[in-house]
Length: 216
Ligand code: 3PG
Image: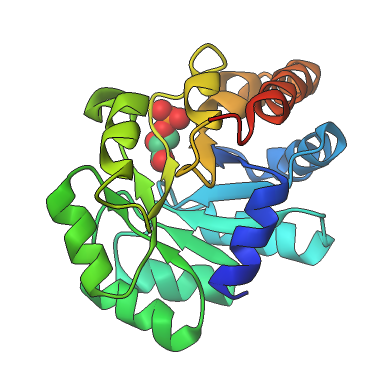
């Protein structure tokens, strides 16, 4: 998938649930409930040994979900994620080796930034779509509004500390092209198999986003 295609898809549906899979049996019911709620993305994080297998299961089932691999901090993780069907990659930070590898593989890579310095580093690598992480404690929507002037050509995917309560602060900003978070499918609810509650959260989040999108 090309970055342009990813951005078009994000335009239709901003929300990216970020999930670390504790139990592989939860992957299919989780994807089913996200799909039913109208979610279009799922980011599986490389925070445990299940990530590659979880991506593989999702790929084989052909869900209507664009698959991301998150917490990509090493080249081996990037290779594993591509092999298992990840369509885009996200990192909490900035790793030039991975950026270059993903560029060669023609797969969108979204590095994490939290400062003007890291924005500049990413721009120097030719990247224009960046994860703002950890958004909540790094200045939240105020930071995004402040950087919009000087970095008018840069788009952000705030992640980290986003909740149903503050989602609206981010959704209306014109430099926000996606919003990531574990709040859409919290680990506790996945482990309790509380699919109904995850459905309710996602439907509410989508309705907030649809009301506020491009309202700035
Ligand atoms: C991530 O991996 O992007 C974040 O850990 C998600 O942050 P959250 O749990 O605060 O949503």
